[in-house]
Amino acid sequence: MTANQKIKEEIKERIDKLSPEELHEVLGFLKSMEGASPQAQKILSYAGIWKDMDMELFEGLTTNLHENRVAGNRPIDIE
Image (cartoon, rainbow, N blue to C red; front, side, top):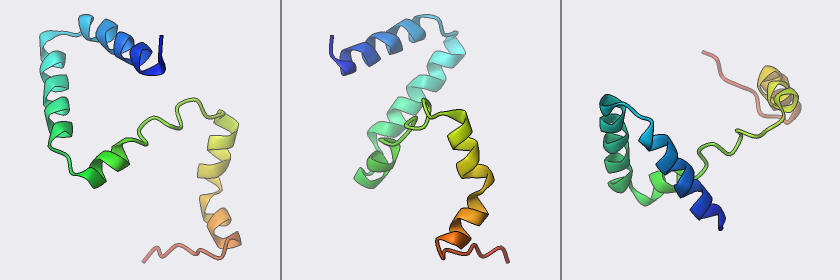
């Protein structure tokens, strides 16, 4: 089974467990994605890429964001 097939199977399993209201929300989301621009599609393709990231690494990146940007010569404007 390919990665795409696994994803589709998981989506189907999860959809079977949704309430009618949740199904309506999912349908609206899917319709909004169909009309998305190529740029939006490109951005959406990154959705979930951090889900398996080590939490210690993630916290280090987010907690120390300001310090990391300053060290990289990328100050943050907070005006």
